[in-house]
Amino acid sequence: MLLLEEIKTNCKIVTNEEKQGEELYFESKPDYEIIKTLKQNGYKWHNTKKCWYRKLNYMKTAQKEQKNYLGIKVGDIFHYSWGYEQTNANYFQVVALKGTKQVVIREIAYEIRETTGLDSYKIRPCKNVFLEKSQFIKDNTIGAIKQAKGLNNGTIYINIESFGFCSLWNGKDDIMTCYY
Image (cartoon, rainbow, N blue to C red):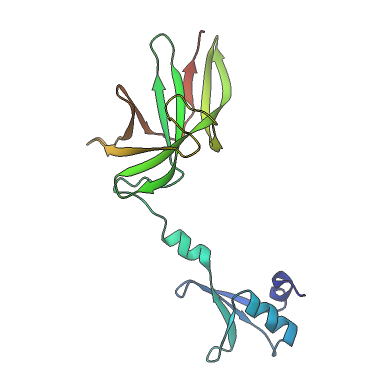
């Protein structure tokens, strides 16, 4: 059986962004095996343009990326900094959106980027590296539903505890200190 990648080396490929598709133009009519492979991969014959075409799913997905009313999307990360004598840090990743105002979060790991002093570190989250257990989320395998909120100054946050909140991570290394 022929592979689609092999077939594409023998034709002109045009990406039709308006129709969100891909068009294959051959110099002459492809043989039966090529046509069979094209059909198995979702291509159809366009009699007017004289090409084989199909819709591209990745273009649909990119256009339909969901965001809530604050612009939060799946994959965004929230940072929680807390502590009395030390600065602890936790990160939570948005794994789903619930309506326009709620998010589903799961706690993720962090990596130490640099030691900045005695028991002081620069850290950053490890996207998609979910912790088995979380002290803030009852079952981190399914996550927790939280309401997302915004302040007039543009800060986006979620309450993680009755006395603490997580803000949308700014993409920069954070400082964590631990003495115990």
